[in-house]
Length: 340
Image 1: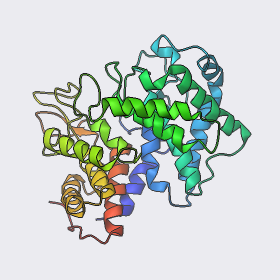
Image 2 (image 1 turned 90 degrees about the vertical axis):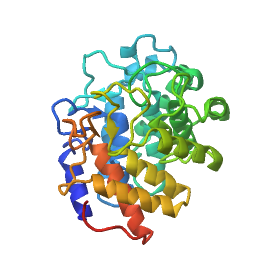
Image 3 (image 1 turned 180 degrees about the vertical axis):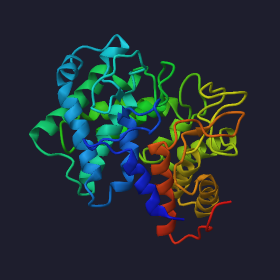
Image 4 (image 1 turned 30 degrees about the horizontal axis):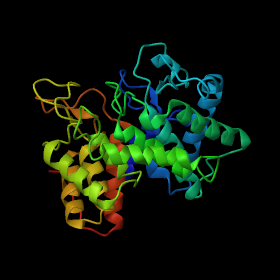
């Protein structure tokens, strides 16, 4: 399998400003903060500059809307458009379309990525102005009272308290507490919410693919909770071509829930974090079966149709598949050659 081709596909979605489109499709050629965070994880350990430049682009975006962040470090957003937007045009401008912008996990993910980048020697922070933005984003989460704030969550849907959103914020705050002022109480309140919510995702969802983020990349939960999460996801959400996001999901549902391509590599990465090599091998095989020769991994397979949707390739799908298979290779675990 040509692993370098994966990076070439990701590069097709890289913009001149350093950020990434979610996909090349006309419906998804926007920039999502969360998608960028996941898409650049393959570059965390290299010197290509892609990791840093992506974060510099997002810092520049936040500076353009610093006036808005300033308002909502003191006054909670009421309407969705008042939140820091989750989705932008390719020139990193807000899009004037109604959207589920209350996505606290995206801000947590960004903060986590900044801290993780610094930890691995990436020059994510350029100057005091970048540090100022980090501090204001921390203050924004405090003003939101993120630990009890209902939001649209990772899937941009119904507003409720999501464990994956609270967890992303906790991970982000922990990651930047050496860079800026983060009150210990701010982290503690989020951890208390997680103790109350987990292993559920929310009041309406017992099992959700988004919970995997608390294992990889955030490494936030203890082993017992992590094992419960992966077991429930494997048993209830896994399907032939990937994982459904949650039971009764209506997105691209044509008789059945859509099957998301990054479900297999994401589960594989989680089992890798847990040191379960036999499961890592199992999900390596499942991931490889799903990867086309051109590495253009789709967002999902339409429920009931077993065919990819138009959001192909999806940057996040390609990145997680690449991350998982390169990790398997580095463990010198046998990977079957070719596709089946």
